[in-house]
Length: 107
Image 1 (cartoon, helix red, strand yellow):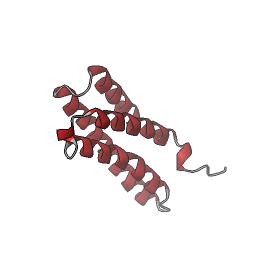
Image 2: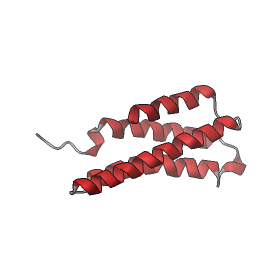
Image 3: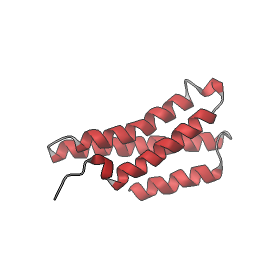
């Protein structure tokens, strides 16, 4: 079986969609959130994608698993940022529901 790379993993592709949603939300946040919620949201969403890729590049399965656990934690952090944004009126309930369903499908 040919190794097609981490880019072909379904959960990597799903994480890219979450990353784009997080960046779109972060771009719409007020300027005073630039170094707070916006920055945290971008870093958490980016961490999901990067940790999946880094874990894929590791040779030992325990290393891979550790990076996937880190990615899972970053997914929870991203979801939490969406909850915060919805709570203070920066995103819609539909956006939050999409992120919630997206996070549940990753479990």
